Image: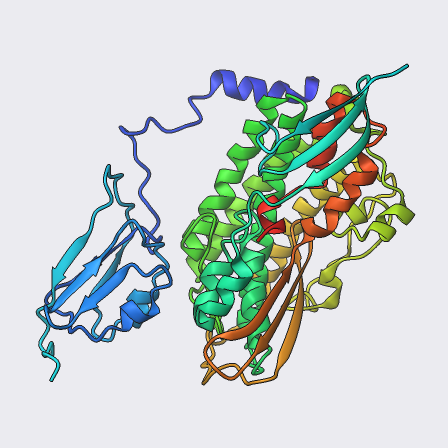
Length: 118
Length: 361
């Protein structure tokens, strides 16, 4: 019992041990894995991100020039970010806010070399 | 005449971290027989690793377990690297060792909290987990995620530890060491804790060897056996000795894990001071060659983790086999539980550190 006295005094006299969330928010670490965003202007629909994604969260449609991303499936492993040939995918270090229904993001790829299949 | 009743302990039970069923037969509050039933967490990971291409197996295998996730990730990468074989730089080996010991720190802090929770000492439970948050913070800062750190790839690691991060890690480890020290002293010397754990669940040396126990369960019974003695990764350069106790009861297992916690902090500090320069990733060409087989044995926080892989020339592996430490430790329950009282069952089950999601990958 006597061994716990320093801890007891520290808990009584010190402030709360947890942050007053959401008033006080800890800044996330840089390069911590938060969520993925796509840059429509640079994407050229090469499809490397869709091939490499382990969670099958990215789908490429070359005829409609669209990239469909399912954020609920994404495990934020960053493989698409490192594999993208034109650096069109960014890793944001803040977590995504919770959602009630699973969203689907559709991006129109406008990169320079997006060409229709022959 | 005493009556016998069979009661199912689990699969849902407040003290178990993961679902397992133990069919306990009682004779007036004393356990006489136990039949473990597993299968509540099976996900077919070994088959999934044959279907996916080899580079994506990392993301499947590190999700076998949430607590010893780093050792699964490092094992699957190392067993695949042995198929070519790929030559790694010393910096990669040291970085993997640092993250492995960081993972062991957080796992043992988690277990010490669960042990306190098993006999109702909830304030110690949350004090240990509050210290564990600091370890998870340095894991997130260096590797990217708190629990499932996807930081290994075939041929190296994806992130580096620079000088500023090194200083933060060393300062955090010093705080963790000081706070854990005061809490472990309470756990080791408290009269109630000792009354609940000393002499409870005794596993003798012969029984431990005959049942095939691994990890701290084996080392608490007097056998000096550890996969880190095989000197994989950077353990050949670090000063490491297995921690052994001879009593074989729950108290001895708790002491082994508490001492391994401090030893893990020491190993991280030593490895960070000796970190060599070099590349963090090596280029790997082609598919795993056909017909090559490889095994790797790594020390997870719960014991020896064994991986086997076989390549067949294509992008998919022919076979991946995982033998996890809790799979080898569950038979010890057949010896630990009969003869103990009803209230000792949670303490005994938790003292082998069950990780059932590892057992049924």
